[in-house]
Length: 150
Image (cartoon, rainbow, N blue to C red):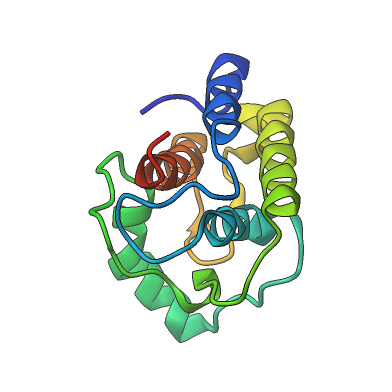
């Protein structure tokens, strides 16, 4: 898995994002490109804001027991896989605003670095290693950028 904490990979991902336009169509799925960018922002909102409520103890146990491995491993997501409710984006979004927010989050994450994330608590999965954070961040971005052909 590529290292999202490295400047080189961060720049590569942002270069891919910059190939998107407000009219880019998905290869699969139903989200618009602006909705996809907003969807990708949710991961970072959970890290950097209080916008999303933490799941209750039972739901967290389920997520850690059943879902965590699929999210933080190096195994790629299948096309059209299900997502958590807070990641569902159904309203219209502003392409340029969501693009800028995502780029800023990616840069912030890279600048904070791998050490900052080692042992950091996830809203859904408890404490993660920096490798698990990397896999979660990079794999999700790569999945959706591939979905939109970049």
